[in-house]
Length: 258
Image (cartoon, rainbow, N blue to C red; front, side):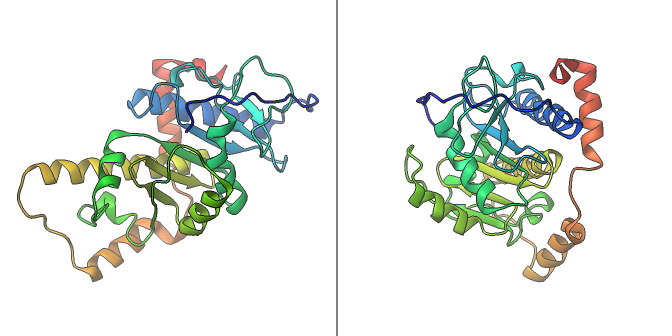
């Protein structure tokens, strides 16, 4: 995230959208709407980015200045790795804010979608010395699968990018100390479902700690077995949940598809 918008340059207009890109736009717009619906947004800040299929080095991101519940498939902006607008757009983008996403996309070709949020529960747990505890089934999804990155300030430098991506490694999720949450996905649905699971785990932990009594944590062997079961052999998560979430959005407001 950056509170300053860096102007972007406009490149030559690209070819008409493919069916795959249009579907990605719908899914990405839906993710923004669901984030707003759940109250995980932070004014106009934070981003969800996605790599455009068949166009290496091209990504979709939200128009900077719009609330998440204003994002539509048609107003998502196509950018390059430097955050420069590709084609025509009436909206600017937060190129500085995209820098973190660009680093992850470039380091992790499997990260089709990168979701970074400033949700309250995630930030609160990131501040805790021991971080996310393996105390709930939701938290066990990330047992030995959660990366950490220490806070270095607002400016995201190439040196920090190297440190962050090294810490992330092949992990599907990260807690950024004092800052927020990050998930990656082979699909938008996977990144979203992982984020929902991580936020729920953080919420459960905070509510349990508020009781002021010692927490019961499963033994390491049980935690390891449960984590393996929850990862389901590396299956792409979100495939079952996503259609139901889209139906929910359609009942509320289907304009994200426009």
